[in-house]
Image 1 (tube, rainbow, N blue to C red):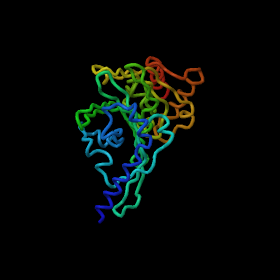
Image 2: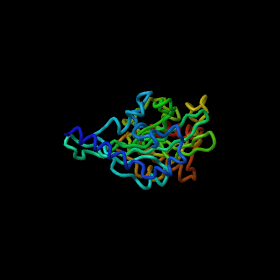
Image 3: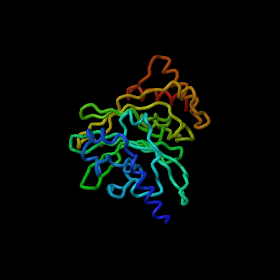
Image 4: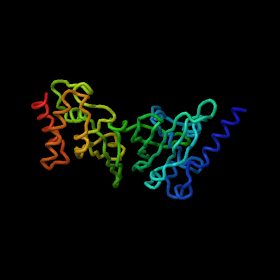
Length: 276
């Protein structure tokens, strides 16, 4: 009886996944449709993409009868995302936790796709990833290109222009040090500079060529400074954080909101001279 109930929950949960299905399927890439519907967003979940191959017949909701669709975020749908909110059910069928999973697909020149996935499994983490996807029959071949959790390399503002993809990647204070490669004293994340998932200090603007020979390579276009983040940054994590914040705020006061990689290097050299 319990098995029948779980099957019924699963079947019913599939029905409202894509309320805008008719409009989506009209313009959606055929390679990213399965049984007439856009591929389940949970098939691109970080736990799934840990494997290089995913079966469309078993991934996502099809593999988890304890997960039930719990509506859709209207704002995400209006922005062109595919996906839904969902609940985890306990053994008695009662909601235990809730999460969400949404994605956008960008076509590559070689009939593969770059998937921008945003998801949360119900905890504090909010994961975002860029995933290279290739359809082979009823199977997806997947490779994670980039991704992270909020300030720890979280991805946002993804846009495609021709065969190039641009996007922003969140940075912590320690990421400034790592990206510039200016760490002669071997300072450590968390101990010397803040590096937590809630410790954003800015972002990098990245460009990625979608051609197959170069899609694995990222090009840093700019480093973006965040005044609000620098003003409220956590100073109880990292013994040099207060000094780092002051350098960033001084840079912003001088009229510089974005830095080239050369200017980033100069800023972190100043950090090593004045702060450490």
